[in-house]
Image (cartoon, rainbow, N blue to C red; front, side, top):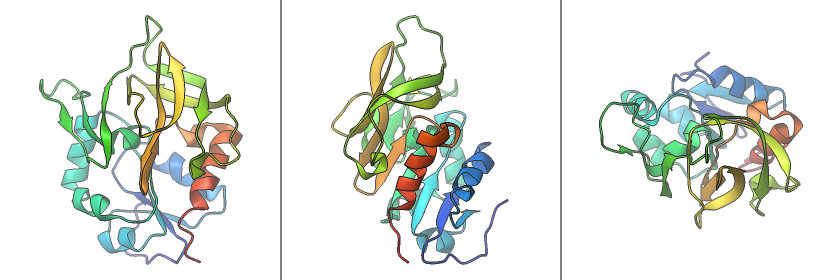
Length: 214
């Protein structure tokens, strides 16, 4: 349920109301952690949040259209609190994506928050999309505090961010790719923490530990 009027507390997590299908599952995963979480597209609510989540499913082209239509692009770029992109939400944080969904031959301009790009996952003949549990290798980023290398998380994707200086976790499916990327207060995960059992819950709790204004 979208909340456009409720004011945030000092420790509220706001999930951006992008209209995507996995809003409820992401919200429920935070609620299971006893988080103060709301879904909203209201600019004042978003700006006053302790932390913000950018979810997403579908194609980059359609998702960027949704952000534009809801007047969310400028507000996302202005945020200074921790912002977590989930799956397609992570991909939207990059400069551009070639997942245009057949709309055109041009790459989709994304939010430009993390200087990398999204392109096809080279699965080396393995089935696509990459769907199911896979291991990650993590960095010392706070998002992965107390997460061990080799931990399993749940993926569903056919596009990826390449390994770069902004990679904060990796995985392997045909090729090595960025399981998570980050720059400054913006970071994202290619996998679905809300579907990744105890490991996913721990990652979400690590995110909740950031930006605590209480």
